[in-house]
Image (cartoon, rainbow, N blue to C red; front, side):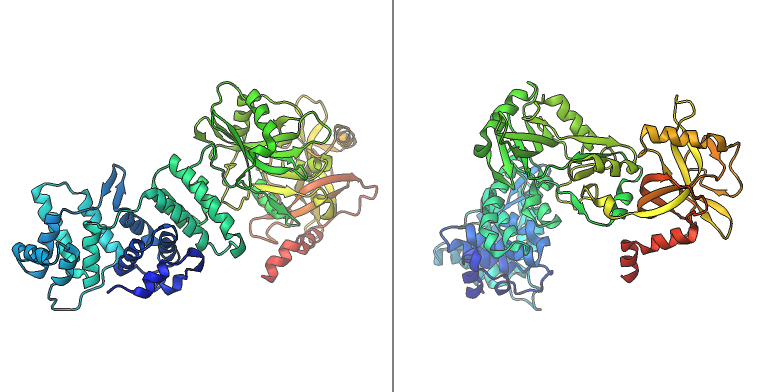
Length: 608
């Protein structure tokens, strides 16, 4: 029978609704059909659907989200597949035949009952129940949906009507008195189907209430944003199953644009770089041997996205439309975009100018959408090239943010040293997609003093070099080694070169010319896969080097196998200090191993 307490709870305003007061099944289990039956009664008793519908979907999301699509389809009286949508309904004749067969009575008897009960087919179904030899198994929403999905997709021939009758017969035989009445009201509805637009809005509100990360005082703000974003996306991608998939994926309405689809007017959640404090190993792990860019960080800038749809240009900050606050920005971009550009979404930094002809300076940091196509899955390099070919720029008004490209991780400290403030480190070509909802491992904020705070001093020996192309006797990079005083071996630990000035390279190359040897000594331990080395030196000089990180690598032989099997230790983020006058003070392998183990992240791992 109907549950007055559940019905009354579902009718409450969503801010007062309690999921635990309506969920009478184990959380995570399938939902009994009588919950939907009570929900339909509740919906029929309210003037406005908003809160009641939100409460129904919230209860499903928080208790048994796998049934969410089935509930939405049943409320909408529709099922969907790649070929379109199908209405869930049954002819009066088929329902009468199913009731007659279920109660083992003739159609004539059922029709006579109809006349006696004011043609109330739902009441007749309630009165004419089957006699069961064993207790029935409770109907579930999932089971009812699967049966009605088959029912809706079948054609309307007489043969299929017989088949459809048997589908309804099975449901009537398994239903309680209350459920039988609800099935008839559902198939021969006195209740109207819920429009899909209402269901999408209710789903957005339910997602907000179900999100435990949203503080109660902020819920009203998020409700407005969630409904607005969902309505805009549904116009672009009118498939309710995509919204259900997004709920299953993250449950956060702010991820809808990325997961479902977005376009101008639908703000996507901007990707946020991770601040690096002391763990340089994460930078080494994610950026070693990949092409990268170091982008200027602009203190005090507003992170924004600019949308153009061919008719107007809008600016969004934190999902809020702030176009009226920056009216001159749209005018500038309208003049600077190429005639072929119809629609776009730009990520940018905006700075209010005090001493300039323009009110706001816009620094573009990314292009996310262009001429009807999402560019989130393009590589960062491709997105920037698209921007360059699609927009003209104007210095101080609308321009690409300043950044430097590099193929060498070792250039980052020198980039940071030359920068006015912090830098944003990004992947350039490899795995550099724009994934707003992911915790990025390819975007990092580097504080200006990062590599100054963390430094280790070592005295190393140059044992080989790579000759610079078309440069005579100058070298582009030097292979340095520590010394194993037990085995009396020189173990390769790092290259240094990309951070040296031209004057330093020339001076160091000149100082090593008299120490050339024809081939590496037997005591030199290095990996033949590290690089093509052009020249070798006698172990005659000692160079003082600073490094910000010691990491393990299969390409270097210092302390090989001591920390990890088949790996040595290498230096990262190195800088040259000078040539030592005392060549006896060389960093030994034991010293290198001790420095590696002294690092903060190594101690943290060992404690864990």
